[in-house]
Image (cartoon, rainbow, N blue to C red; front, side, top):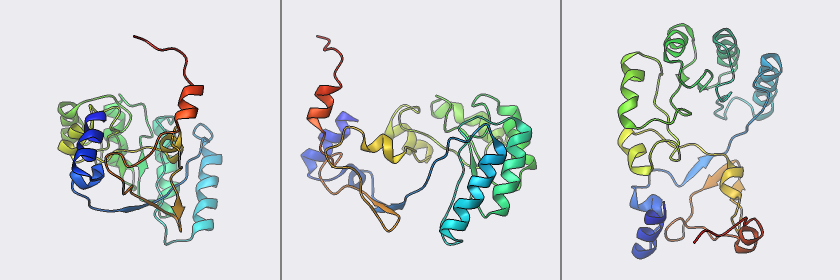
Length: 202
């Protein structure tokens, strides 16, 4: 990541321009921690849909907390609510259960987001039909080049992005804009980082 930042600053461009900008704005979303209480999670999903209307894209990510039966039940419920997909509902290593879920669920199932695997490990998920699309976090999938090779987008929460920044990401009418400054395009909160420092290794 540091090398991408340096390359962007040398070129005077944000990293997304170096990688080939496709969108400069993305829709913001919401997260919930009612993973283990499926009834509460379904009710929350229903309330969110009612609050935002039918025009906003919604997806659900229970972070690998569901059993097969719960995942199938929740996928049917949010399918009726017009959600786009259910992401990482099962244990990250249970490829067999994922293949069965993809077979039975009416909603697309998106796996491979949580498991710390590289590009080569995607193959059994594809051949086993254990995911309807590939997912990948930059931090878990060996960096940006690996993610680009797999054509699997990274995923982070807004809170993860804002920590340590001098200026938080702004949301305007439900949209988050890509940075325009060179490199990462953000400034670090040096005071916060010094305050959070535990030790210096030399």
